[in-house]
Amino acid sequence: MMALFTLLPEAVGTIHADGKAAIIEQLASRFASVYGLDRDMVLQRIRARELLGSTGFGRGVAIPHARMPHLGEPVAVFLRLKSPVIFDAADDMPVDLIFGLLSPEQAGAAHLHALAAISRMMRDDRMHGALTQALSDEALYGLLSNVIDRDAA
Image: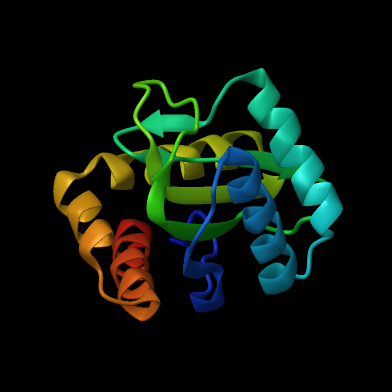
């Protein structure tokens, strides 16, 4: 079975952001640079989705997501913040783990399955703790790719 989404090593990083808008801007820039997407379109799509309701998931996690035209497969970006930021999360807690997902416009069920897999991963207490404590971006990627590969098997 194939993975539900692609997460490349360059798509994982630790950043500083001073607010929700800055997070979304950096997320769009990372999607654009890693996957060769149009940054402005990514930004517009993620912002439009946020207007429908915050993707602040709770427990310090946000999962900004959107559907994009001309995208061949779901792709992800994972950002860990150096310090937590208010993100209008469901539990009113600031976020420091951001898992962005973009899916093809026509990927209805695939998009929902990928979101569900990310949600399960972020709800796992051990995984959440390991991501928060990881000492490098390489360690973050290793943790995430192990779970993604395991879930695809």
